[in-house]
Image (cartoon, rainbow, N blue to C red; front, side):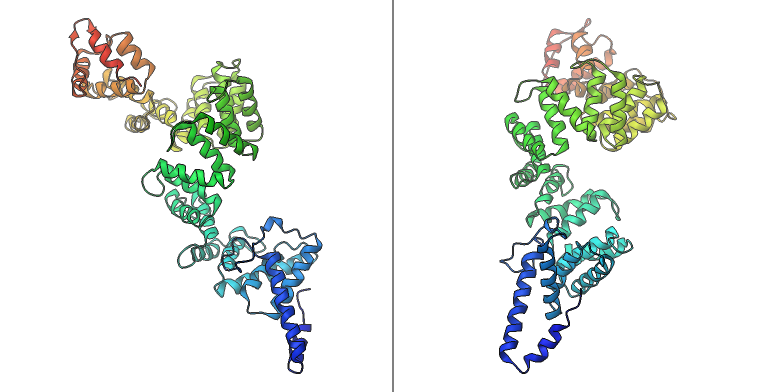
Length: 502
């Protein structure tokens, strides 16, 4: 089926019949046109401007239209063997072939892509890279796949799909060293060229500082662009941005609308976010039953965030009946999926012996995994267990480092815990009034409940006199002057402390 010798005869006849030759050339153009219309890719930036392109998943090999397209591309390739666009499109169709000669078609496809890629046809480079990276009909060859992908992604070609695919490899660490800072610029270059899926990841790169300093406003712009172009992940992130006030003022109504759009497109994390909205009653009436329904729906389909949310609700017993067995079940599933919140919560259950037996070793392992993903609470808990030597060999230096990281991430427990270690020194700590006072104020600014109770409700009576003196010095530097008394902090001091609360 892959040869068409009649055209060799036709070309010989052209010499003796001008009319026949013109007919053959017209037929050739018709075949090229038919091949373009049936098999050109939307990502082929070298296709004719009036050809819209066809998504690969829209090509069905079990139809008469496919057979006609394959025949047209075969004929066009035979008539114009030097046309690299036609070679690429024929290879694209052969990738969908599902007949008896499937192995032959795969071999022919590889040959055509190689020919076109080596001839400089950019889309062929992109497709050839995917074949080698995925082992699609050939042995996997990451080096060969990366070679062609980088050639297409970088100048002078700057192909947007190649840039996106290369960014995906670096984000996931597939065949390369994982690097979000390498992925970010490729995502944004692809997004600038109009690749819709790249826009949300360019937004993420701006939000988390993977393409220069963190830029929430630029992140919001990219989420918005992707959302309006119909990308469900961008819609979810745009809704999240409105809900959290990231790069834009808080707008609970807009948050609900965009997250609902993403959920309507079956974006599973959006389903969990809807649960959060109804559980909190942000921009709508609080509806615990509806929230739990969203959580359960997402969790049952394997969405790890939803599983972690269920675990937390069952553990708290505030909005629903306490059920530690269910909390353990769902947090274990979330943790096994690599979810940082799930790892934190499962670690806490092992740490406290809730829903399971106490196991400090497992708790430390889980806290460490969660902390490595940037979870602030896990950093704090890991730090405390390292300092105490619970479930792990005692390491005060590493433990304090984790507490400091948690503090820098503005987790309210961390500065209070640091203050407490230096106020009542043990395990190698030495009393330091300046460290204690500084971290007490930080905890107060984060509205940590114990800092609030001990400094305001209990007037600071449990802290050493030098700590309160240093607290007065630091607050005076902030323009908050007050008078101390021998009976603890004065009324003016308490008023000054209250002014730090958010």
